[in-house]
Image 1 (cartoon, one colour):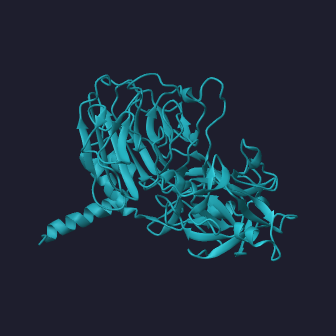
Image 2 (spheres, helix red, strand yellow; image 1 turned 60 degrees about the vertical axis):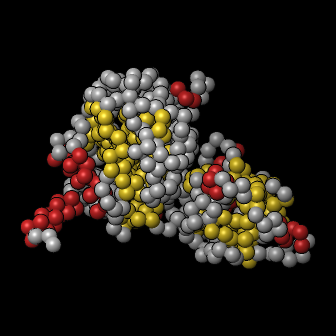
Image 3 (cartoon, helix red, strand yellow; image 1 turned 90 degrees about the horizontal axis):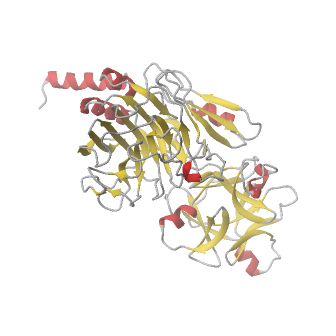
Length: 498
């Protein structure tokens, strides 16, 4: 039995955590936040400023999203209203610390090569919906090619100065690409040598270091190496992560650094490594830029989802990080629906009818692997009717959204490859499952449904010159044209012909 004094002490501790934000706790521990980023909530109890900015495609205008109240959850309803009938991108993730260390679209870097002058993509504003204590908010869904950066920061650690950082991430969204990072990087967006970075990494990259099992792992990107411990290679104490929401922590000071992790929805943090720096990384040569979703040289092949995070001045104590983890758990991150519009049922058979004026007799159909829109009617051949019919299945990747299996070729699914829609046989890989999972939402033109690619939520089923693609509302591909976009990505979900 706990004594009354112990119970009252626990109640007081919980009250303190719930009445403050993570960055209030870091400050009280003597290691204040010098950057604080979140699209889901305020990270200070008194913060009521802007959390992030979105831009809508229909007219190019911007909207700042703030907490509903000071210290609270982001005003997702304002975003939803602003983005109705069009698409929106996250253009700025504001720094709540007062240092103006905002994250914006990442510029090209060393990874791109000398002939590439394009910036990284921006994230969809609706790709990562969640709830915090029942209130809806949106995270930052990073697809390969997407990234944010600030190369001109204030008060971020440089050289061998001490710092800490944490991030709340989606533990089920990852790949083996380089590099899904959050933290300190080079100011030139080029690889300037070992020890010039100190960032949280999450994924299954195995070229340098690993944890135990098959991953994903929390590691540290220190430049020219992802480290799970004292040296390159496996640290058996760094486990594969299986949490839906994960808290990841990295911190470093002269010849000492640590990795911690835990379930962001319950429980405490566990130390996966604490000890000396790897050989060649002492002292460090940190430069003080900030990155999200990319490597220090703008390596942008990774994927992941970011909800909140901060970087501190000084090496946080274990007690401070324990309090921050309790605060995160108290926020009660939870999943919510990724779909809207027509209610689909696994096992049902459907056809997809175009709504673009002049194309309303056309349906999504395939001929072998090729997918296009074809004129289909009750008098069409049985073969064509079957080619224009699809069986709805539970999403091959996430079990939340949906996949579409060919009626005439069971085991073959609609999937995208290089943003072209194809019909391919399920090969059982993670990549295929992601590419064959789609999330319907209310049609952007107000009719039927628009069908979003799970792994690229800026991209939708789109017919263009009769071909079928996953297209964005503006982009480098010809099928990304903004002309007639909302019509071309809106389909009526009808009963299957076959």
